Length: 116
Image 1: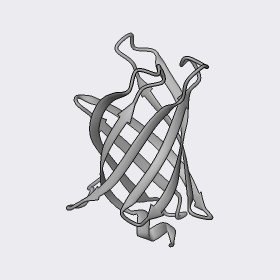
Image 2: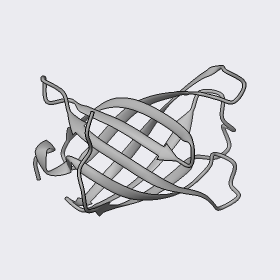
Image 3: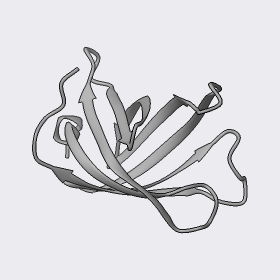
C-alpha cells in the first residue's frame, strides 16, 4: 500500500479517552500536501479537528488539534493500522485527556472526495 492509496473520505466510529465505549460518529478526510504528507480533517457533528501526519509500514500517524467549546486549543496524536486501503483501525490520545485510557477509532472508506 502507498500513501496515495489512503487519500479519500472515511466513515468514523470512535470512543473518547474516557473508557465509556462508542461515543461518536463522523467523517475523516485524508488528502496529501505538496510534500506527500497527510492532511487530515475530522468532522464530528459540528466539531472540526485538523491534523498532519505521515505513513510508513502500514502505520498512519497524525498529530491533530482543535478548538474546544471553551475556546482552548487541544492537541493530540492518532495512530492507525492500515488494514487495507479501505479500512483503518486506530487509537488516539490528547495531552489533557484521561491518562488511564486511549480513545479509539474505526474508519471505513466511503464514496466521494474531499475538496480543500
